[in-house]
Amino acid sequence: MAELKNDRFLRALMREPVDVTPVWMMRQAGRYLPEYRATRAQAGDFLSLCKNRELACEVTIQPLERFDLDAAILFSDILTIPDAMDLGLYFEQGEGPRFKKIIRTEKDVADLKVPDAATDLDYVMNAVTEIRGALNGRVPLIGFSGSPWTLATYMVEGGSSKDFRHIKQMMFATPDVLHVLLDKLAQSVTDYLNEQIRCGAQAVQIFDTWGGVLSREMYQAFSLDYMRKIISGLIREHDGRKVPVIMFTKNGGQWLEVMADAGADALGVDWTTDLGDARRRVGERVALQGNMDPSVLYAPAARIREEVANLLEKFGTGNGHVFNLGHGIHQFADPEHAKVFVDAVHELSAKYHAG
Ligand code: CP3
Image 1 (tube, rainbow, N blue to C red):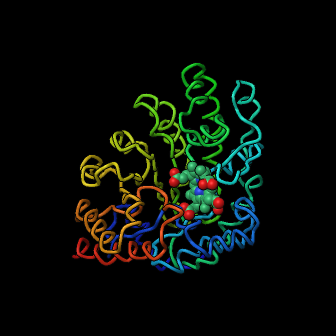
Image 2 (tube, rainbow, N blue to C red):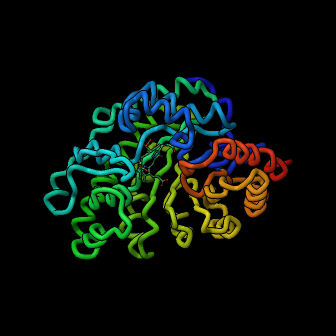
């Protein structure tokens, strides 16, 4: 494998010194880029794009050609696991993800198989291998998965949801059934992330997009405990280097203290949490990743730079910050504004790392 030319992202995750604050953007490969839309049209649809190793590699690299990013993220989706459980994932135009088979009963859960990551999800592993080759050490590659709770919401609701009616009913009425489902998902996610690491993912992120819709007790029992279990089963060193783990619970800001003890190296935070407060609360236990509101990218360049400066000042000096948006970049964001954001992070952060 090629020597890593830019390791500031991995160093910041391990709270080691860096020259400038590393930056990447959640959903950096996606619809806001015209070149992404062109490649997706060539593939036919989104899932075909994920399953084509050359094209998945191409869209992974696209944002790196435009912006001075410090990490690449595998182009795929969190719903590959339920798809590999034979639930029949498809995307309805404008409606988001859908499943042909919805999980509602004890029998539905009992019948679910834990996918074999190397064979059932071979297309993801092929993409990881292909991307590592194409990156040739330029920046590290991030692998990812959804959290068990987040994956379960899609499987039980049958798609995206606003009120989480069915999964919350399961959680309160038949919690044992939900625990069996989450256990199978935790096993699947552990195997899936470990296989990504074996194929070349140099850091991994767990997307807990919907953990934040729970109460503190329910979050701990139905989301955090399963992420902790996954993290304890992950390969933490590969090819002579630490493989950092980032845990991102959207809207999880009020629980940072307990999240910091789950075994992750870094916590992703969204913009509803003050970065300075977050740092004081987690102390030296974990690095932080975030947390500019993606909507700031709708503002003019000067306002974007001002917000980057504001967040850098909140984090202050010292190690352990990876700059990012607080959630995925919007499909209507202007790529030129994304460039202003990325360049501002490098330019304005140097003074916090001097010495
Ligand atoms: O960050 C990256 O660039 C890597 C790629 C990535 C995608 N999805 C590509 C994608 C990642 C990391 C995801 C994760 C994901 N997928 C999450 C967690 C996201 C988070 O930030 O919390 C979720 C909830 C999903 C499930 C999913 N996939 C949804 C809700 C959608 C949107 C559907 C829609 O039509 O708006 C998708 C589709 C999807 N995943 C797209 C991309 C680029 C858009 C598909 C397209 O090209 O039309």
